[in-house]
Length: 294
Ligand SMILES: Nc1ncnc2c1ncn2[C@@H]1O[C@H](COP(=O)(O)OP(=O)(O)O)[C@@H](O)[C@H]1O
Ligand SMILES: CC(=O)N[C@@H](CCC(=O)OP(=O)(O)O)C(=O)O
Image (cartoon, rainbow, N blue to C red; front, side):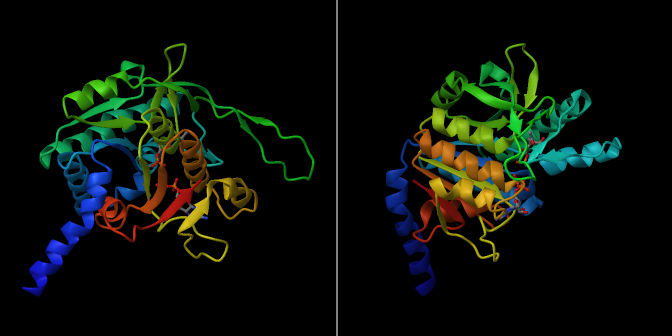
């Protein structure tokens, strides 16, 4: 009796959130590090399917950094990153597109469909969804007051425009879009874009009610390693400058800030290794991880 009452209470706790998010878009970035084991991947798929069936519009953007690295290692190419971005020469770009679009994307789509959902895989090149240009990245000078230098990352892109037409068409037919972070340049060439940045840009363009970034840590931590449950968007740059936020966490917090500035209501960085992380974040009073706030 007690147990069934507890179960009913869980459902009732979700009710205000289900009502609030009805017909709203939620962009979920599924990081490569969160794709840990088969059980976790299946639970991710089930969370997304549940969201769709209770009336939300989930849009998935996935990463695949570790999966790309495994392939590069087989080819004896050493991965290299600057400020969380992969240095991408022509050969690496071929591997990036092959692994992200040909492998990781298809696996996620296959899993969602196998679990009873209706997913369609896309890259940013399909329907000109994610348009890009070469990313300009400035060095952070070691010596005080030294002028920053332009870093050449090869075929790494930044988003210039999101064309949501193809996503609207899929939504009309109740498909769940699963997007690989490869963009298209003016020259028609592919660009490798950090998946967090793609998720942030799509969330802003779709006026998403939430952006959720699933990663492999509990959330953003302070200098002593304690979880920060909330960060004001205007303190993000200071935390980067102080060296508290580093590496792959940099594009995450920056994209959350940009998404909020672009009209997204809430942005969260959440531990994708936790079972049903999406449901806990979306439909419980406590929430989990770090919220970036206005
Ligand atoms: N302040 C911080 N709080 C939490 N993680 C941080 C912080 N600074 C750097 N990181 C690193 O960022 C990583 C997440 O980025 P990344 O590896 O690119 O994840 P993903 O593959 O999910 O995109 C964490 O595993 C952690 O090592
Ligand atoms: C420019 C850049 O760094 N692109 C990323 C794209 C994939 C990604 O972002 O994957 P995760 O989310 O799993 O890290 C890369 O090549 O690894």
